[in-house]
Image (cartoon, rainbow, N blue to C red; front, side, top):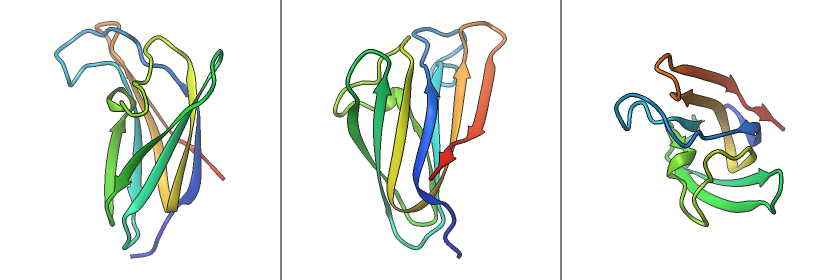
Length: 123
C-alpha cells in the first residue's frame, strides 16, 4: 500500500459544547480527529492545543496502528489535562510518519443535531 498524507496537520477551529441532547455516548457533542495511517508502520502522533487566553497544552500522545484509522474524540483526551468544554481552541497534529487527518464535530445542543466535517490543513 502506498503511504498517503503529511506529517503536520492543523485544525484552526475547535469547540466542545458542555451539553447535548439525545442518548449518550452516541449523541454527546464532540470534536473528532479522524486519523488515517496507510503505511506499514505504526504512527506516533502528538497533539498540541492552542487557546485564546492561556498557554498551549500538550502534547497529547496517541498511536495509530499500521494500515488503520483512529477516530479520536477530543472529549476523551485526558493527559496532560482534559480538553475544556465551552472553550475555543485550535490544534496542531504532528506525526512521525505521513497520515491523513479529517476534522469532525457533532453539535447536539439542539434536537436537530449538526454534523460538520472538513479535511484539516496540512503542511
